[in-house]
Each structure stands twice: as structure tokens, then as C-alpha cells.
Image 1 (cartoon, rainbow, N blue to C red):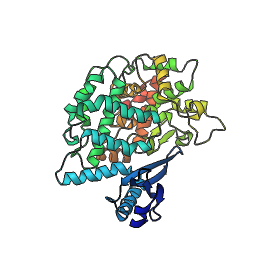
Image 2: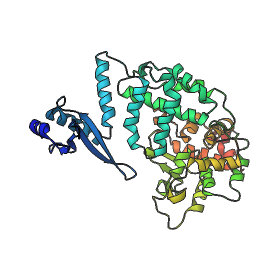
Image 3: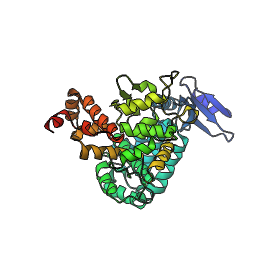
Image 4: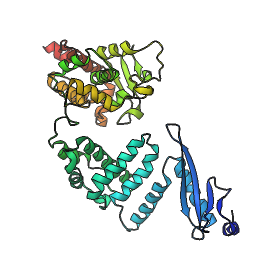
Length: 408
């Protein structure tokens, strides 16, 4: 492509030949624009194709179009959305010059353009856009992202915090994600004020049945007994396993047989499935091992989901929520983690850090190193063994560490 060819080009698409995907698009009206066509294979196996406008001649010449196309192709190759990255570059340059300030609306648009191509669930894409537009932008959309503090976030979420608790928690997480993305691009000097916002909102009264409702540990054995009774569906099996391991529901729903070692009684969850993005090895108590052995088939493949839904797809969180509602109305699956944590604090002598690690919570670096050297897995194994005994109505003496037993 040369300047003469650009000027003489007729209606249609005329590919450059030097930069793959770059072409001149000439419309019937005679208007001309540079377009970069890119493609990427998504995790689900689908092909994502997108055309990006790079500007029009003569404002953007052949040489400039090639330079821009090469840069955008490289961003695309690295997994970034070129439009979002160009916005980031422009904003960073403006900030360096003291010109303008990125608003939350602009930051959320950039975050969405950057992240959404990687999202597999089309419903999630729509929900993300709609909840931000409805619940957040009217309050802080035009506020510079660097000026948004905990009070502004609390004001935005307060109207829906008790009325729509599940939606409110998801929106809160989305706000945090946008703010931390903005920090990474230099639009914001600090990350998201997670601690301050959670301290205020989590102390607000929650209606019965909200995401914070948990089974009281005094009633946990009775609820678990009902769960293990007749009509044990796959949803109930998944819930039982989640309770016995104190895991998050998503960790259970995505679990495969390759992650399980029944002989060693451990469940190794890979980093890409963990909230903290670190591999987590969770001990399995005898009740959890027994449950898995009861549903394992001889023909089971390592890559098979342990708790599969229709079409061998992961169970939905609604399926587990239904199982929970059947045995303990007005409580939630996630609430079992709070039940376990409170039981461990009130009824055992295990340290706080052991219980926190059993919940796959991140400890302080020095504490983490100390426990890794000290065999924390064995201590967690004893704690979860005691938890299984407690749920099945057996003695809770196993919940006491050896030293405490001797003292007793």
C-alpha cells in the first residue's frame, strides 16, 4: 500500500500486505479509513474476531497506520484489548502533563473492554454492564477515579445493601476491581479501600436469608444429618463435600478427580481456581473421603468433574443453594464457612491461623513461612478430622491438639 494507491482505491477493502489484518476500507460515499482485523481463540474454543478503526487518511498516513497496527497487534497478542490499552496510554500521557482526570465511568469502560473478551458467560457480561450503569454510575460515574474514597462507595451501595444483598455484594466487588485496575494504569494512587468499605457495610443489618446467614454450629450436626438422608442428589453431595472441607462453593463445583488423592486424603486445588490465585492443598477427613469413594466409578476419568450437572457441565450455584434451602431455609452455602470458623474458635484449641489456613485465607508472609515449615497441613488435617466427627455426631475430643489433650 502506497499513498498513490490509497488515493486511487475504489470501494471495498484493500489489504496492506506488510502488517497482517491492516487494510484500507473505502465506503460507497468515498470516505476512507484504516481498519485492523484481529482474531483470538477464546477458552471455550470460539473464535473472537474484531475490527478496530485506526483513523482516516490523510490524518493517518500509511506509515503511521502500520506503526499503530503493529502496536495494537502486540497488545492483542498479550491478551489486552487494544482500545482499552490505547485509552490507558492516552490517559497516562495526559496525567503526566497534568491534563484532565479519568472518571469512574471512563475507567469502568476501559476495564470492561479489557476484561470482557475473556469472560465465558454471556449472561455475566450483560449483568456487569447493567449493574454498573444502574447502581454505580448515577452516584460516582463522573467522579475522578482518584478521588473515590470509602464514603463514596458506601453512599452508592447503601440503597441496595439490605434490599438486594446478593447484587450489592457483586457490585461492590466490581467497583473494587475497577479501582484496582485504575491503580495499575496510574489513574489512581491507591488501590480499593476494601477494609473500610467492608467494615461499614458488613456491620449493616442483613435480612434473613442474605449471603451472610449461616447455620448455628450448635445445629450443624442436625442439619448435616438431614442432608445425608434420603434423596441424596448431586446437589446435596456437592453441598456435603463443601461443608466437610470448609471450601467455597465454586471450588467444589469445579473440582475434578485429578485434584483428588484418596489414598493420601488430600485435595489439591490449582492456583487458577483459587480466589487468592495460589495452589491450596486441603486435607480430606474420613467423611469426605467416604463420600468421594461412594460416588467414584471404575470408569471415572481424571479430567471429569466430580459433581457434574446437565451435559457434564459444572453445577450451578443455584443447584447448591436449592439443596441448602431444603435443609436449612434462610441460610446460605457460603455461610458454612462462617459456621466452621466460629466452631473452631469456640469449641477447639486450634490457633486462629490454622483455622484461617483451612479456609484458604492468606496469612501474613512471615506467619505463612513459619507454618509451612511447621507442618501446617498435619494440623489442618486434625482440625478437619474433628470437624467431620462433630458433624457426624461423634466425640469432639479430636478437636483438641495433642498438648491440650495431655493437659486435660
